[in-house]
Image (cartoon, rainbow, N blue to C red; front, top):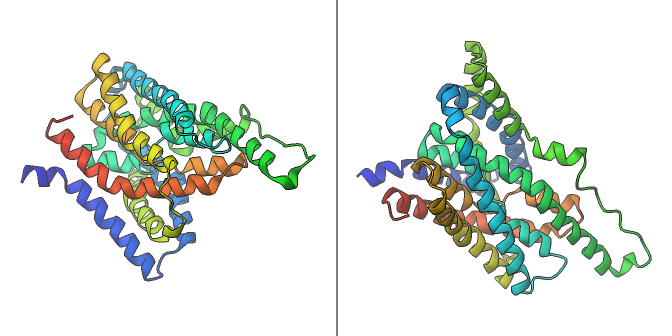
Length: 329
């Protein structure tokens, strides 16, 4: 009974995902709806969710105690990136997909899916820890990750025979746009919350209430979005190749194991361990496909990997949560 109670958050998420899947089949939702839900979540619901929950759940002392913990996600993601580079060559990943492959091995969907899942599993106290993981990931992805994807774009250009004699216009990595990508709305909301908490400033009651109401849409929007995406996946476009097995292994085996190894040498609170473990085992980040399109790389390849890992996460997340709850991990 205790196990079923601890899994109640997982069951709630699954029901909402199935509802999204069912309503898409009934033509209530479509691809345009998924884009709308994604925008609403990233630009309205998640930022206000971060703001209201952090200000309600944390004090200045709580935040100051979390400072050193940020080293763990940084070390974990850098190790996964290095492993991704090695496996991309070991598996013979084509040069025009190598950068995207390497990025997908170390970046997870730690915000759009990660935030609501972590809170559903571990409660609101877990949110700042999930934010730490996301902050480090955003910085690394939009620098070293984006650089690798930009090289893919150049390779794609060179492989296209119609571009003979043409000059490839490579987008700049270190630019104002890169800074904008890092400073996403959820991150800006979290920064605002941290500043207000450190200054001991309280928001007016109406502002907190509004933030809580709108922030409450986060989990439903995210789970319905996943249901829509799964329904719309073109199964015929999925090819079980060494690329796919490499990404699945990286996301759901290598990354979580790296977390366990790192925290063995850098002991952290149990809640932080659980949050980082779940965040590391999330599916491929949706922004990876956006970056691939921006840098003229193979965005369809990334989109397929994102969809496949999202479907697999429906199985792995409950399993990992049970193992964490039982103390196996």
